[in-house]
Image (tube, rainbow, N blue to C red; front, side):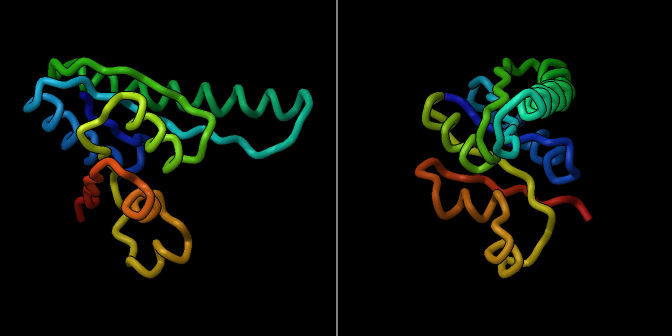
Amino acid sequence: MSVVLGYDESPGAVRALRVAIEVSATYGEPLVLVYGAAAPGGLGEESTAHREAVHEAGRATLGHAVRVAGEAGVRTTVEVIDQRPAEALIDAADRHAARLIVVGTWGESPLRGALLGSTPHKLLHLSRTPVLCVPTEL
């Protein structure tokens, strides 16, 4: 089993990282760090360059989380996935037999999340894996 974390360096994700590390350490399970890197559609050289740039940004972003988890003695796996964040997290959770998915929130209202399609809102409705939503510290 594992713990899957959606990480993008947002304030909510930074706090969620701390919680995910704590859960991973408690259960002695690896932490799967996921970055959903769905690039806009299109074909051709420009699209390929944009996709590569998004992937590079994702790997750089996840590097911070790898360092923090490593300092806490938690093993990590990094995945930059060509899907939107919620889809990427569900896919990773299924493939890694995740105990749970951890995501940060921005403190937006449930109505706004439903209307705009926030990642936590989507996960709560689509994931078969339990979802832990960590609020941003105020």
